[in-house]
Image 1 (cartoon, chains in turn blue, brown):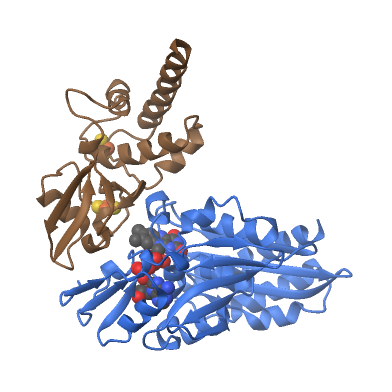
Image 2 (tube, each protein chain N blue to C red):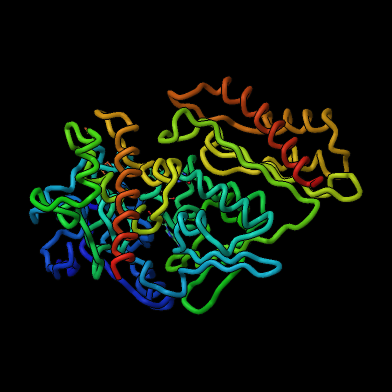
Length: 284
Length: 162
Ligand SMILES: Cc1cc2nc3c(=O)[nH]c(=O)nc-3n(C[C@H](O)[C@H](O)[C@H](O)COP(=O)(O)OP(=O)(O)OC[C@H]3O[C@@H](n4cnc5c(N)ncnc54)[C@H](O)[C@@H]3O)c2cc1C
Ligand code: FES
Ligand code: FES
């Protein structure tokens, strides 16, 4: 693993880090929980971004939650600053990630960039319409999380570019979110991860989000099913139809934990229950 | 390359390979309390305190520990002068083969340092990454809750004496 590694840098500014990352055969490391185990023997240098103070922060104002890329999952889970629908939802999801020592290590940026089928926070970012700030030295661009995930972070980010911040909008009244994971034991990787958001306006669904992971190779938004719900009443029938559409829109991955057929059947039930829970929360 | 860090309060300079894991470096340097079970971050046997927080040293590149403050179980107590948590583990039979203990003691220390009044659920969560294949999970919970009680009592009596 990382057999050709000869250099390890600890920059203290984003500009310095991006400059180092522009060099060939150089990669970024944050928590290192995926990078340290990477079976990539082409890498000769690693740039540790955890000494960059600017990247470690967690703030919430009236409209947005800003998560620095090296903020750990445990810091999100235990945050006193995060409040309201979006804040509490992020805390809940962060609390389901791995175990304490790992949560102390896994970073928000690494969790998004690693794009694994068991990653949890990216599923939450998807239903919360998060935006991702990317830095290439001083220049920065802000993109929707769905774009970076669909393009895959590895392809989307330019050489030398890093994720510096994740912005999550604060949803208020009339919005409900729900996250659920089917997992055999707390320590295993999930078989199904599903999350939904519903925003109601005058009793009708004005926005719907349905996202998943583990049934797919990386986090995915079921946009066809979302579109079906918009402008409709949150009736049991509409919810069931949306869940069916979501379940039919996926190319299922499988492993020894569960077959494709099993995942499809259970995923549909989980989406239905998740949508019901989001509707109930939106009514409160 | 060289790694400069602190281990159990002592400034250290270790010669390391850039792709070596912290667990392997610590063991080579004599900190054999650091156990390696799964090597993939799942069992918690290799947990060390890393800048005040438990971390799996088997998936931490040693080079990431540059400037870090590390505590292994050797820094917690000695056979002659065990830490209260270690005594409580013995009292409650929370140690059998002992392989998981160095890691779970580090997690327990972190819990009590930050929460002197833990509930049973707090203990379960703090040790959620430390597998034990021998004792089951009840005894170590009892041991940690007992240690918390004793710490509180001794804190009260010291306050009373002042
Ligand atoms: C045993 C175990 C169980 C786990 N369980 C879960 C779980 O239940 N849920 C979950 O969500 N995760 C889980 N994880 C974590 C997940 O598998 C990844 O390891 C983790 O998300 C990576 O984050 P990191 O900060 O450690 O990133 P690193 O390992 O440092 O990096 C991961 C990748 O992202 C890149 N990268 C890192 N930061 C940035 C950045 N700021 N900008 C651009 N690229 C970047 C790196 O170059 C690398 O390619 C688990 C990990 C382990 C070891
Ligand atoms: S050896 Fe590190 S977690 Fe198992
Ligand atoms: S005492 Fe043997 S694994 Fe815990």
